[in-house]
Length: 239
Image 1: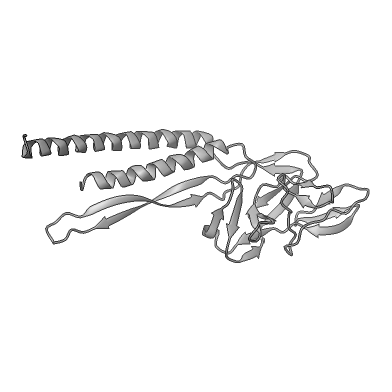
Image 2: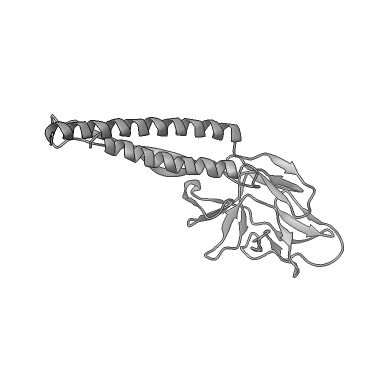
């Protein structure tokens, strides 16, 4: 069984990696999506005595989120915003603010700036943004300050987590962070633009083929080990 258990552990990790690759490909056209990858760790255990061989097992240890910039697409929408550089928008969540790079917002019937599914967009102080009624176009300054008719009324709450590795994905484009949120130093808001997914579909498909081949090799090894054990049992008990 020493030959089977490490392979089973690896196969389990490859299945999780395949799920992540499929998720990346499915969200290749999702605004503000951040691609993920699997991090494998190797665990080595020595034998019970000095002469016994050690055992090495691979394990899908964690997920890595790629926070690199996606391509910017011009839309001309008054409530479409993209971040050039670092930072996240804040939207209201059940247990606190959620972070997102998806800046396709709308104004609801009462004038609250919300996401397409109705979650309020938060300002720099963590309060929902209210768009005042009246004439004039809504405009956004590079620091996220929103104005109507030349009068500022709110500032988009651009923040960065104190620990980028502490982000927990809650949906395709939103993250929760339990640590501190810091003001953005190197990032600017572009109005009338949306940031596209940073997924590289060709690279993901190539990786999918690699994972499929690795899984097939592991399955072949499991089949050979199973036959070897069956042959040994038949020799030990010919009846």
